[in-house]
Length: 535
Image 1 (spheres, rainbow, N blue to C red):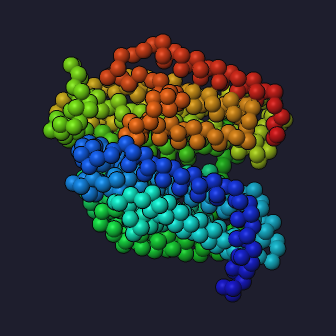
Image 2 (image 1 turned 120 degrees about the horizontal axis):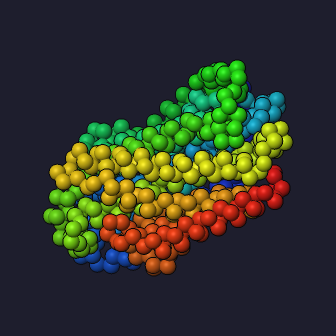
Image 3 (image 1 turned 60 degrees about the vertical axis):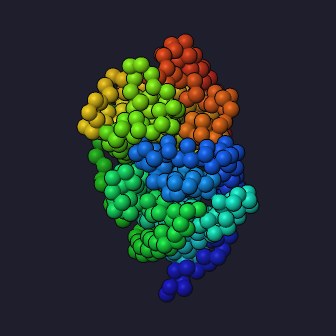
């Protein structure tokens, strides 16, 4: 019985590897190279122990702890401790995203597009596809752990020995295994690809928020998050392995539950039943704007709540921030106190750039759904049957993404201000926070414009927008720390936005960024109107 359920799993593994012969190496090489380059850059940027110790002092404030996790070994801040403190969490999130996208592609997406039904018409076991997907992803994460582990060790830094480097890689690999289990489970619970991705990313976001709040206020709360577990490995400091084994065990339990659910549910259905729709669609749903909103409603609501919680989590540490900044000589030197501005207001500028880049993700997801609809040939049906012009169709996704960018940025700002006001003796005004966040809107518009341009001319390469956004996050968040040259920051629109309230509002610069966004959008619409749909 059980043998039949897994019949020809080996052939399914070969099929998945054949289909992902380009994706898997690209993910592995990109994650390994970025990790090794980051370690090398940190070592090059901070040569002496005095320099590293100075930067360690800046890492002790609650806002940084909420962002990257608690610092271990900050009393003797070696290159290894610095690497684990500042890079482990964000690399783990990137590995989790890789797992979510690849697992969804081989489970719910294949099922939604009929490929699993075709495969099951052959002598293949009922659980072969899911188990093959899990095996391929687990092997991929083992390879990732080894390549990153030996890659870091090969740098030859004294503080990054083989034991610590392999633990660093293992922490990343097991995080990937955990979110492989999470996504496989949601692929059974949800009835479609959107739900699988939406629930999985929501789980990742909740794990990050729980860890952020827990790292600042409660150790027990952090231990409820898998991202909190991997930070407790204390890589390059204490070398603790039990979080790795705990993460693997949790991943295996999730996979076991997913396999059971896959065995008992009907093909094409999810464990969470879909509600029957209305007999007649509303006028709003019949419009080109209403349909994409309805299709992405769950994700839109999840991101809106998530950004509000993100703002609340960051705002909750503002009460301790001023005391920390005032008591820290290094931070006072870095922030250079300005007349009329508190140190917290100056620190707000860095926080706003990070929040804005995160706020760019949901509008881009909305726009890129159009590429998915085109791939499934739904776009052709819309254009042919609903008598909708191409410009109106693209315009509906464009308007929805613009509204989403504004809404999530507002919600993050409201959450940040609300929590900060509750914990600060002299809170920052809402107007100051609103100006500091809204000035970044043109940068979001440029990212939307780049996506529209790619959809108009090169839809196959539209996902390059994610690489550009990832590059923007790297140079804006870590640019000063890794001492990147200024021109690297100027390659992203976020590097051209004045940092209010520290810098003066440069209307010419903001108008120039806005004009670039307009040109990109207009060009994209022209290309979309002329190119072959489905090509």
